[in-house]
Length: 127
Image (tube, rainbow, N blue to C red):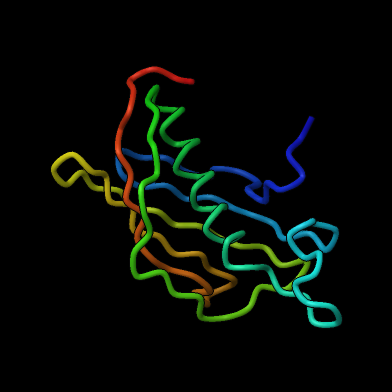
């Protein structure tokens, strides 16, 4: 059964420390329910969730597992409306025991969300 909350459509490219992905925001997505009547916009947590899904899929493709710890400097700069397609760009780098994932969510050429996710590698095995 497909997860109705998942907006991540495909991973376009995965390199050592770089992820590119596509996501769709269909009008019938439950994320739009109540956000906001007559003026639907995708909630910020949905944008963060798209990035999280891309990072987790990347880790799984590499045979590892990561646990997201925190978010920093997250900015929501423009609303995302029903029916829009988004590009996701994530760059990761190890810093001590953490992995820092810098991300941008882009609609056409406009950044709609950006920030930093901090994660820890918790396993070298897929879950």
